[in-house]
Length: 216
Image (cartoon, rainbow, N blue to C red; front, side, top):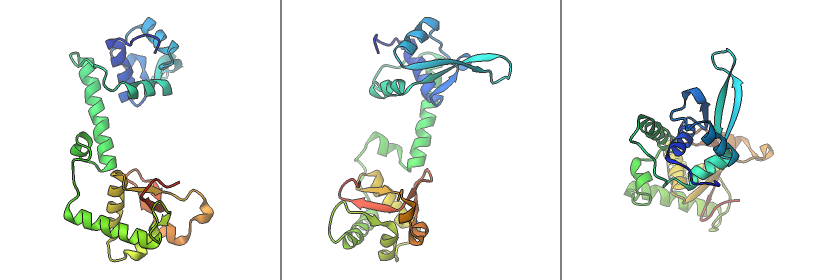
């Protein structure tokens, strides 16, 4: 940003973010005005373009955040955001709804977000993690950061119900103790890998796991 962003402009940029990155100008409140929008565009924070109106009649102005705009917001999460106006309250409300969706998808609790690292695993969870780690290192011959197929892990831990093992792996990935990846080369994916695939909360496939470091 070439200049310090003003409170109304900050609300405007956040309003774009909570809308998913863009919205029609007529639906955005507050609108800081054409000069401010042109300055934000010149700074590379937003883009403005006329599109066919959603009503089907004529064109309307659509505003969207650029990658630079997203980056600026991410680096200024501590910037003061006025919630004394209805527009500010709406932005906060929509931001919390987005946060709820994220927490639900990642299967986190609010405590995990606000107090990261404060929650300790229960005895049962710790026992499950220990069993996963033991099986992993038996397959990796005691080496850290070695690719192990989830299919092989399931075979060794056949006594653990599939859903419980899936949750243990997802929890370990969430806490940074494990890294889960998919096999990108279709030729590598065997029938056993397809049968044993782990699905993330967002529906992405994972075929391999690494412990003790980030796999590559």
